[in-house]
Image 1 (cartoon, one colour):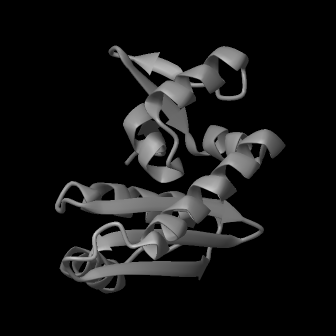
Image 2: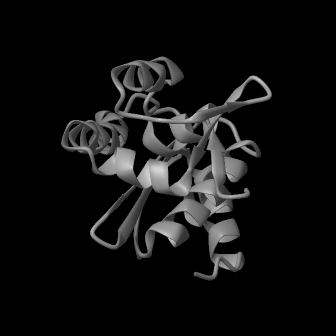
Length: 147
C-alpha cells in the first residue's frame, strides 16, 4: 500500500465499523481524501486519529472485546485460537504490519482481527478457527516487513 489506506482497511485495523469511522469523519476526528469515489487516509492521519483520547479508549475496548468474545467460548464445537502479538514497532512499521494482516484476512474466513499502536508497541489480536489463525501467524513470521 502506498502509505494510503481505504475506509475498509481502517475498519479492519481498528475494529470500528465503516459507519463509525464515517461518524468520526463528520465530527472532524478523522480526516481523509476522497479519490475516485473512495476515502483514503495517510499514515500520518491514522496515527493522529489513533492518538485522540476518545478514539484511543474505543480502540482499547475493541481490542479487549476480541479476547473477551474468545474467552466466552461462542464456538465450542471446533478448535479455536486467540493470539496476541506485541511487536516493538515505529508507526510506519505498524502500518506495514496492519496492512499485511488486512491483506491476509482476505485469504481466510471466520477470523476476528484487531490491531493498535501505542508508545512504540504494535498489538495484533487474531481470534478464530485454529488452522486459519496458525496460517496467518506463519505467513507473518515468514514475511519480511522491514522498518
